Length: 354
Image (cartoon, rainbow, N blue to C red; front, side, top):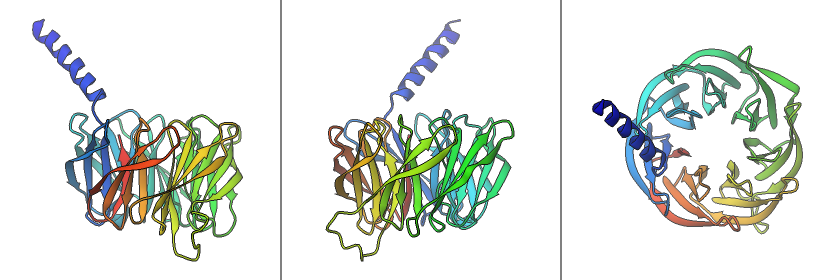
């Protein structure tokens, strides 16, 4: 009896410690075939290296399971998808399995139920739906849909009913509904939102409470806001703003990359490559439209960034510099203050905080 009681106490204490631990940060290093793990101190944002795991190819996009300690990764250079178990105490990764999927998987996402892994393909011009097993492994391929070249992301609305796939080359966002009964994506009406030439919708993020979504526009070097119709599952373009300063010579090369909405819903951030900055916007609470605040210098070719769940820190990965920039977010005005710069390795492609 005493030993059983002791075991229960140990489990409860372990769970409490795990729940209160500082966040873990995962970074895919595309040219080193590695995923590295850091732990971030919650009060000052300091990063400490925890682990480095070799993978079978150059890793790209990362995504967490919504309720279990599982990390999914695209292995872009070999066209595979991989699943890893996360040790909740140490943050270290252990490979579960890997499956062949298609050329250049650019983005991976998990539905809210945790039953499906969805992925978008830059060169193979398609989206896939895979089952996720009870053990967290990537299971059978349930569906493959041909869309168009340069599919850059696959993102759901807040409720997980509808899924959107921005494409930079055809300048379109494909729109789907996830049918739980058939376990398939079904095209909405209309099946895609056509954008203007050379806009290049790339990554997409939904507002946490308003029926509004935002995209980073790669070729347009802009950010766009859309009204979301929750009944039809479609987007309607409402606003487009530049991500560059007014005095910037737009003849210089560059493009946008990542986008994210602050967990509070008050700010939107977009990364500029070429200008090497993060553009900051205030969200107007009445309608979700944006007001430009300014630009903060970031790392060279900031390809990916992520805001920690508390909303206190933003970590940006410089693809060319090989560094992570850790910024403290001023919640009163959305400003970014750099608090640490960490040399992480060759070609950091994705950064994700758990």
